[in-house]
Amino acid sequence: MSIPENIAKIKEELPQGVKLIAVSKTHPVSVIMEAYRAGHKIFGENRVQELVAKFDEMPKEIEWHLIGHLQTNKVKYIAPFVSLIHSVDSLKLLSVINKEAQKCDRVIDCLLQVYIASEETKFGLSADELHELLQSSELDQMQNIRICGLMGMATFTDNMQQVRMEFRFLKNLFDEVKQKYFQGKPWFKELSMGMSSDYQIAIEEGSTMVRIGSNIFGHRSYT
Ligand SMILES: *Cc1c(COP(=O)(O)O)cnc(C)c1O
Image (cartoon, rainbow, N blue to C red; front, side):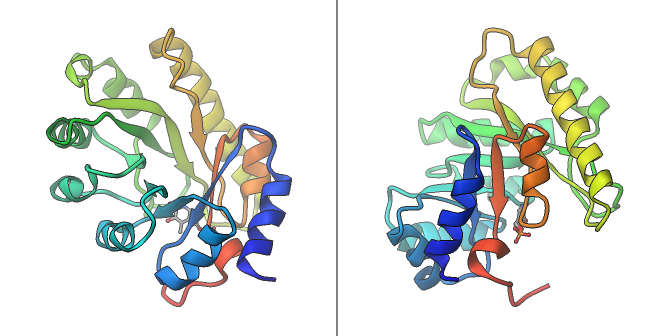
């Protein structure tokens, strides 16, 4: 199937209110343009350099999301244009994003990445670290960031029951944190979970944003 057909098929499956982030990492602009011309406007990249290069080359109405690990020294490159950063995993990083956003006279939307997998390799905060971050008094001073929700990646496994339990854990944490720290802050509403192999489960467990690469663009030639 073609890229536009893949996107159409996935969008048909998404309940109202669930956004599709087309993960375009490793794919060239010419290929991403096929999705854009079919009407898709939200793309996710996991590397800063690649994200900046594609932003420069592609139509400016595109919403670019950073979904991969972000180093503090690279925030300045994406601060002028990024729409949503899914992968914030420390107070330090939040404060750098805030500072760079201020320089651009912007408010940057962020999600806090929570570690839900049983693997060593994934980034993110533990539930305890998340609470600690959200209780920090420094947060109140950060006028140029807006925390819009949580993001998580399930374990890479065929055990779909395990994946479901990890998503359920994140949804429960989301509800708890929303109730505890975000009353009267309606922008805290996003739960970014689900990729090509597990997005149907993620939706059943309450996802509001699915990040899908391979099912749209085919296999990536690296990793
Ligand atoms: C690559 C990536 C995805 C998409 O993965 P697919 O399995 O190709 O859908 C989603 N989220 C993150 C954080 C990624 O790095």
